[in-house]
View 1 (tube, rainbow, N blue to C red):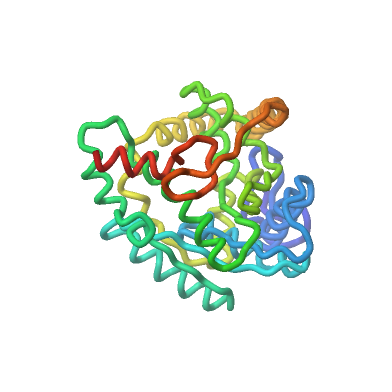
View 2: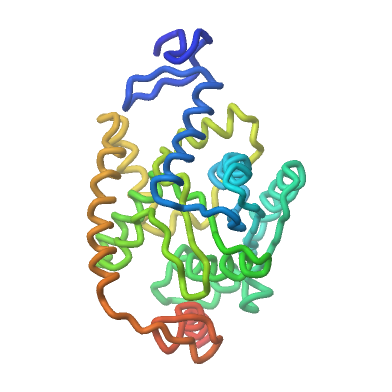
Length: 308
C-alpha cells in the first residue's frame, strides 16, 4: 500500500486492491458517498419530495446507509426516517435496538419500531419451535416476515420509498442462492432499478455497488456505532457458505466480485424485462387483504404452515 493518498497529500489509510487506488480516510469516505450518489442517480432511485424509510437493523451496513442517506435526501428534497424490525431474538436484538434508537436521536431522525410479535402474534424464536421437522430455515422464515414488516412500518410513517442496506456482496450471494434454487424470476429482482409495487412503495438498494468490507471500513473511520455480534441463526442457510466461497475468490483474484456483479446485473436486467412483458394478476390475499400474486400471500401461508 502506498504511504500517501492518491487524491491528496494526506497519509493513506486504505488500499483498493481491485483498482490499485490508495486513499486517506477523508478521501475514502468521500469516494464512497459519491459512489452511492452515482448509483442512486443511475437507477433513478429518488424523486423530489419522496419520504424515505431507511430499514436499520443496527448492523454496520444499515447504520452506514443511514449516515450516507441523510445528506443525499436533503439534497434531493426528500424526507428521511428510520424503521427497525424486532424479530424477537432473545439476547441479540435488544442491543441493536438501543444502538439504533440512540443513533437516530443523534441524527435527529424519526424512528419507528415494529415487532413480529405485534404483527403476526409470533416471534422468530417461537416460529423456530413451531417449524418442528419441516425443511424451513430460520432465514427463510425471517426473510418472509421481515419484508412484510418493513412495508407495514414504512406505511405507518407515510413513507413511499424503502431503502435497504444490501451491498454488492449481498447481491452476489442472493443471485447464486436463486440460481441454485432454480428461482429464475427472483434473479430479476437483483436488478437495482426500483419497482413501484401495488401498495405505492418503491424499494431501493443504494449500497448495491459497494463491497461489504468497504462499508465496514466506512463505519469504522466515521465512528458509527454498530452491533458487531452476528445473528445466532445465520449459519442455518447456504448464504454463509457462499459468502466464504466468494471471499476466498476475491482474496486470490482482486476485483472478481465486481466483475461478477456487473455480469449478473446484465442477466438480471434481461430477466426483469422478460418478466415485465408477462401478464401477471395482482390479487388481494383472502386472509389479510394485502397485495399478493396468489390467493394466499407468502406471510399468511408461512403462518398457516407453522401452526399446522
